[in-house]
Length: 149
Length: 129
Ligand code: HEM
Ligand code: HEM
Image (cartoon, rainbow over all chains, first blue to last red):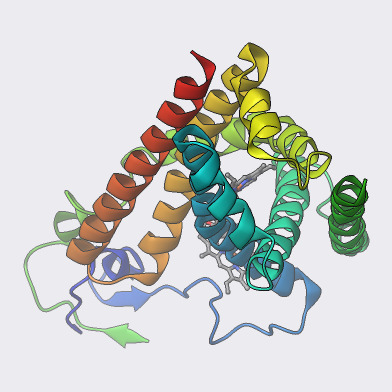
C-alpha cells in the first residue's frame, strides 16, 4: 500500500471486505476543475476575496490606531490612503468586501436550503457579480461626493 | 485503483488523533453566525466612512469616540477578527502540508490577528473614554 504522510489522505482510502483497499475520489480542486464555469469561478472568488479582505483589515487597524495616536499620525495615514497607491488599495478592498458580502449572503441562502437548481445558481451568480459592481461604484460615488463637498 | 493492505495497523488507527472530526460543526456554525452579524455592521461602517471621506482628524476621532459608534466598532472588531481567523484557518488547512506546518501557520495567524484586534479595540476605547 502506498505510503501516506498525511491523515487526510488516509481518509480517502477505504477497504473492501476482502481487505483490499480502494482509493476514494477526491473532491474537485484547482488542477482538475474547469475554472471557466461560473460556479467554480465564483466559488474560488469567495475564498480570494476573503483572503484579500483579511489583508485589508490591516488598514482598518492602522486607521483606528492612527486616530487614537493623534492628528499627526492620522494625517500621515489619511495622506497615504489618498495617494495614488492608497486609492487603488482602498478601491480593491471595497470591491473584495462587497463581493465577499454578497457571495456570503448567497452561501447563507444555500445553508437555508434555497437555490440549488442550475438556473437559480446562475441567476444568483449574476446578481452577485452585478451587485458587486453596483455597490462598489455606489460606495465610491458617496465617498467622492463627500470629498468634493 | 486497488492496492493490497500491507500493514497491520488499520486506517482508522492512523487517522485517529490528528485527523478531522474535532470541532468542525461548531466552526462551520460560528462562521455562519459571525457572517450574519458582520453583514449590517460592515455596511454601516463602509457608508459611515464613505460619507466622511476627506474629513480631518477632529471629525473622525469625534465620530469614533461617540459611545454608540465606539461600541459597534469594538463589536465589529471582535466578530470580524474571529470570522477572519476561522476563515483563514480553513484556507490554511486546505493548502498547507504536512499537519505540523498547518498547526504552526494557524497559530502564527491567530497570534497576529489577536494582536491586531487588541490594538484596534484599545485604540477605539482610548478615543471613547
Ligand atoms: C460547482 C463547483 C463546486 C461545488 C459544487 C463544490 C462543493 C463543495 C462542497 C459541498 C464543499 C463542502 C462544504 C463544507 O464542508 O461545508 C466544498 C468545500 C470546498 N471546496 Fe468546493 N465545490 C465546488 C468548486 C470548488 C472549487 C472550484 C474550488 C477551488 C478551486 C473548491 C474548493 C473547495 C474547498 C477548499 C473546500 C473546503 C472548504 C470548506 O470546507 O468550506 N470548490 N465544496
Ligand atoms: C472582516 C471582514 C471579513 C473577512 C476578512 C472575511 C474573510 C473570510 C475568509 C478568509 C473566509 C474563508 C474562505 C474560504 O474558506 O474559502 C470567509 C468565509 C466566509 N465568509 Fe467572510 N470575511 C469577512 C466578512 C464577511 C461578511 C460580512 C460576510 C457576510 C455574509 C461573510 C460571509 C462568509 C461566509 C458565509 C463564509 C463561509 C464560506 C464557506 O463556507 O465556504 N464574511 N470569510
